[in-house]
Amino acid sequence: MKHFLIIFLLFLFFSCSNNTQTELKELFDDGNYEKTIEIADKNLNDSLDFNALFYKGQSYYRMLNFEEAEKASYLFILLSDSNNEFYFDAATTLIRSTDNNDLLLFAGGILYDSGYLSRIDYLNYYRALYANGLHEEARDFYFQIEKALTDYEKVLININSSAPSDMIVSALETLYSSDGLSERFISSMKDAIRLFNRRGDSQMLLNLVSYGDGDDASYMISIGDLMFNLGRIEDAATYWLRAQESYPRETRLRLRAL
Image (tube, rainbow, N blue to C red; front, side, top):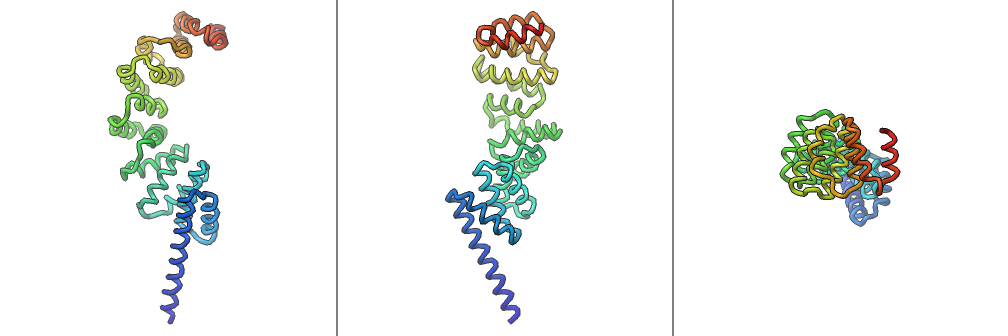
């Protein structure tokens, strides 16, 4: 009789659990995220419900509440002991919700090692590797994904990840060889100039600047900033003056510094 009672209680528990799982999935699939969170929180107040925790994180992500999505997804991953579909979905949500480099590295590592790292998550993982001082691992990762990237994507991923200057220069040279003085190249150069000026690596961009400046006045200001940072005052003034008509205030402020 005692054994029968235990079996009955276990059956009742798992039946309720399955019903809750079905309800949460249906609510989530219908886009009723607030109700999903409400029921998930109720279940979590009673017990550690992995299913509730998963859908809570997914719902917050769909509602663009990335802070709560990060918390729920991270906790789910830590407590989950099975590398199933839910585990990798939670890792994907985490890498897209957080700006914490440690968590980006954690989630990215899970996805990369298992072959689930999506193309759109390359940047976050690459940036996290550099931010955590894993330069060799970052280079290895980049060389493995390089063939899958367009020339423009190579520039974006290296600049936005604050990759080493030589990697950025190489990507910019490749982009120029395919695009010439395109809007994408000029925009990328402006970003690179700001980054290299902060790093003290301005000299490395001189060759790329020599390719020309097109008709973009804002790019002329950026090149002038580069020249000024290198101590080439006359060249800086020349570039700034060429942008004077389009950017009179910015030009005037810079010329006063000479």
